[in-house]
Length: 421
Image 1 (spheres, rainbow, N blue to C red):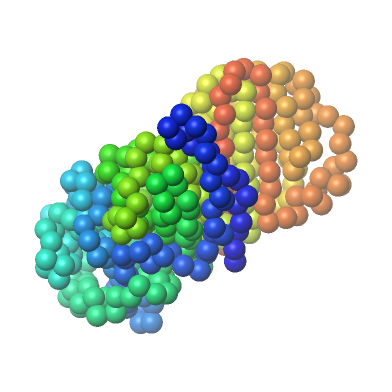
Image 2 (cartoon, rainbow, N blue to C red; image 1 turned 180 degrees about the vertical axis):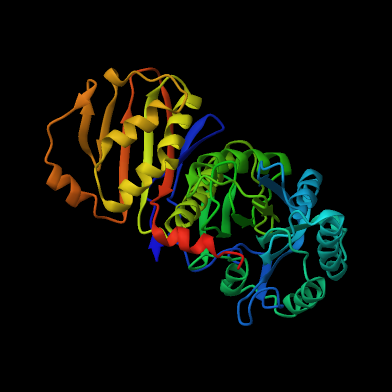
């Protein structure tokens, strides 16, 4: 599957606006191994059922700048605590991640196990443990089977490759139906660089991160401070604008490594096209997470404009996106616009319904405080698609926001009713 972007990027270079060629096609069959100087592997070590990959390793051949965004859940897991310290140091060599076990709410032993994972990788790479990011995802409250993890790390080093990274992407999955990868190449004023990424997520998905992991690599040379700033802006417009069930998990993180293997140093205006490329990669992966939402049969986008301010727009958009009544209406292909307006009204943000306009699949269904005349049968038919559009235009200011969400199905209940047992 390839997605093409036709937008051209402009940057102010020495007082002149210079136009660059479009990004290459977004390759969804290759991820973290696409940038130069990275290798990865995914193996089965015994955390999950036999045959399901459960340990991933991503290694930069040289020391890299590192940036990260983490869950805001205060019951965060030991790997999150450890990896925040790694990101604070600004430099990293590797990411090691396991699935099937969250290593969360496991006490002091959990912290020792997270550190041990870093130490095992660091010993192989002859780098400090504080340069190894650790991530875990899976069941909460169960100690890590460290004998299996240690075996898996050794196996992963033996299988490191700079080729196909499908096993790496597969090894971080939990209830996902498929792996999620994306990569592209982009021109900048300083030269051509590559970006690649893998991600996981299907349930416990909500803003301020979710039960998701995303690992991003680039062969650009970027200062850790600049990399963190770019990542934060992009995450806030992508991974922090998705919701499946409104639950913010304990283990979420997005990590970016920039190793400079391209020989291209990005600073100032040269960062603009890089950030645009990073956005395209993260937007694709964020939407893939929503599409892969547990039990989901279709997704919908909520766009709010004209709110009192950006915060108000975000609160309104999120409330609509997380409304169970809206989500079930989307599942049924029911243009029940009253649920949408009701959700907007309880968001806790200023709203004057008499100045609001609501569009479903491009059809104006509400204006001037009352429904409009529209062909309901045609609209019902238009909503029988994989993606549904909700646009709410307010008249209260210039605040804008968007969210992606998935419908609520009986399958979601089935999956989560027996997640642990």
